[in-house]
Amino acid sequence: MSQVSRKKRLSTLLLIVLVNSVDAKDFTPKFFDNSSLKYPTGESLTRRYMLWNRCSQRFVRIKSPRKIDARGRNKSRFAEVAITSVGPDVVTIQGVKSTLYLCFNKKGRLRGKASPRKHRCHFSQNLTADGYVNFHLKSATDPKLFIGFRNNGKSLPGYKKITNTRMERCFDLSLRELNPKKVEGPFDFNTLPLSYDPEEQETFSTKRRMRKIRHYRKRRRHRNRRKRRRQQRTIDR
Image 1 (cartoon, helix red, strand yellow):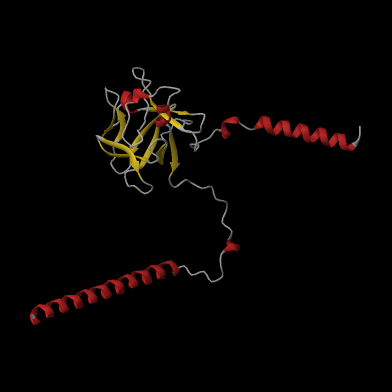
Image 2 (cartoon, helix red, strand yellow; image 1 turned 90 degrees about the horizontal axis):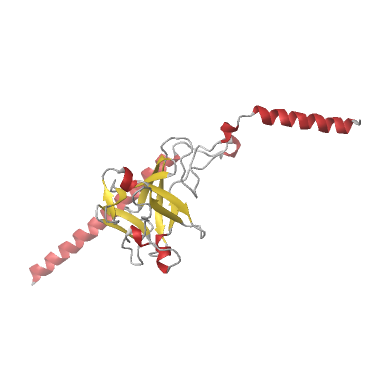
């Protein structure tokens, strides 16, 4: 037996020992994936998203208990929602600004509730073939209620979804994650600039504030000057 074959056998045996010594539980994911909301570890996990509707081409807004639509623009204050996992393949959708939970009433209409009810506010997620997401009610009584909106942004009854129809795409949503957590490596002090000043940010904010003050004073002087001119004109008349 040659020396090269011995080294190969020893390296193979060492690899087998290392693989058997590692516990597979260490590799279980402990965070949400961007494309799916699961419940991997039994913990309640929350992430902030904006839900984009395929029909209205706008974002979903939860404004009040009866005002739920898909007419929000990119920076709409009611378009931000918090999706929280509450069980295996079960999530809740809450408006960050209004603090209302997205729910279905007994008639299959979308409503906002102050507290999430188990059979009316718990949803499950399905991924479509086009890459969109469908949220349907996780309930034994009404399992076919889906979140959908019309072309004008008004909410659709949950039971309106029919497969292989034009209306089906109005129940397709896309998730846009807000402030995703980035995995950064160790900090390299060699990349720090030599002219770094720890008070640079504070100095910059002070200069910016002074520029604003000077701008407001200038506007006030011009306003007072125009006011005096108008008064002088009325006196001359």
